[in-house]
Amino acid sequence: MRRVVVVDERPPLTLTSDKSSEAYRNWWPGPDDAMIRLMNRSIDLLEDLARESNNRFLMNRRGYLWCTADPIQAEHYREHGLKAAAEGTGELRIHTGRMSDPDYLPHTARGWEDQPEGADLILEDMLLHQAFPYLGSDIYAALHTRRCGWLSGQQLGMELLERARAAGAEIVEGRVERVETTGGRVTGVKLSGRSGNLTISTGLFVDAAGPKLAAVGRLLDVEIPVHSELHLKTSFEDHLGVVPRDLPFLIWDDPQRLAWSADERQALAASEETAWLVKTLPAGAHMRPEGEKHVLLLWPYHADTVPETFPIEIPDGYTEICLRGLTTVLPGLEAYLDRLPKPYVDGGYYTKTRENRPLACPLPVEGAFVHGALSGFGLMASMGTAEVCAAHITGSALPGYAPAFDLARYDDPEYLARLEVWGEDGQL
Image 1 (tube, helix red, strand yellow):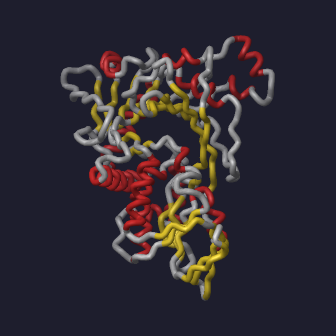
Image 2 (cartoon, rainbow, N blue to C red; image 1 turned 45 degrees about the vertical axis):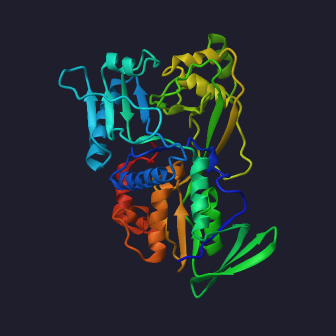
């Protein structure tokens, strides 16, 4: 198949992909190894592309550093790490201060080659603060997951776009208005755009519309079972230099109450709109350095299902809340609380299935396919999911994990029963 037409009413990567943290990981929860296998394959493809392009998109493997002050959470790290190792993430190395412990290999700031896989569970206080001297003193344990890091999403997008065009893909600026069908199969797609209306005769159509996935599915009279959450990020210049430039992707993995003064707490508690700020907030405040001087902070303390609306609304106080939530793990950030830096806040939608696994499969209309529900992991997973979707389209051999990302899984009573037992939303 040589003629591929990509239709987008916006410039590539400008709806949600450029609003992400641009991170990747092969560290995934789940009842089986499907997500780990998919991510390992997708990261393989990213690494191949990085080699071929002289690492144009600045891929690193600094890892994710999960930190906790809770011994019970540290034991969960051990249990999860052993399970993940058995499912393909790589060896779990446990560091307790004993002579028999494995060596801990520090990460490097740039590149991904010659770096360890698996994870290091650090339970020894001296090693923890030698490796990461900027961390807070209350931290009991840290889990450094290693086949993880980040990259430049814009540069990755440009590399892929140029390769697609070189292979013959056509990019059309327009909007899909209707998918035409005859006898239960796709026969054409009607577009509108600057140049007027256009109908493309085709027997193949892929819904890869990101947060508009369900809306495009309805053009085929198909209800795609997804919902969306609004996730934000804030960035600012670290002019005080409190964030180490070689920092891994840092995550505070405990629920917490924010540290307010007595007067602040009283004022916040007095209003229905702000009373939630004095209550316990969920785990998951995370951050990373950006470039030479900036820092990104994210905290999905609100993850309610919402309709997809554009432009998105930015809530008040997001930067301050993120800062306060990360001061326990990185106390240097407290220097910014007295005088908040001028931030840039944006965000996008995590469009996801109930168990947060993507869809890369046929739709129940002949010739129609879906590639989406990539939630907050589109940049890291799409190399792998696109390969699965393309195999469906061309009739090529499917990888063994493909059924885990097929819409047909919801027709399997055994799978639905497993979801009930699983009892998680698949969000790490």
